[in-house]
Image (cartoon, rainbow, N blue to C red; front, side, top):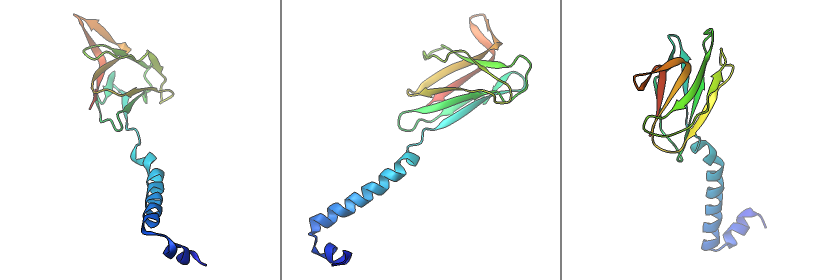
Length: 139
């Protein structure tokens, strides 16, 4: 008996279960692409600033990633560190080597505004950080 003969002998319920199993198998193969974690990049830019100054991160599956890089050749380099202004969070100070030699990454799971700075090119003046500062807006 060939495959068609076996299928014709199956009950309606068995055929439905077979179709559902095939569909579920094809969906699980596609799931990793559909659930990819969004990643945004903040780059050190000329003029000692972050590009973009505000990183907008739209979470998918409850999380998103921000990556910091340094594509410049700035003497002295850049680093990145969190500071708290509203939302409390931690990103340990990480030196970012020139020409994208290293990166820092942080996974965000909560909505909010999260501030960061280059400790080399920012200063605390009159109760505020100024200079090379930026923020992540997690939606």
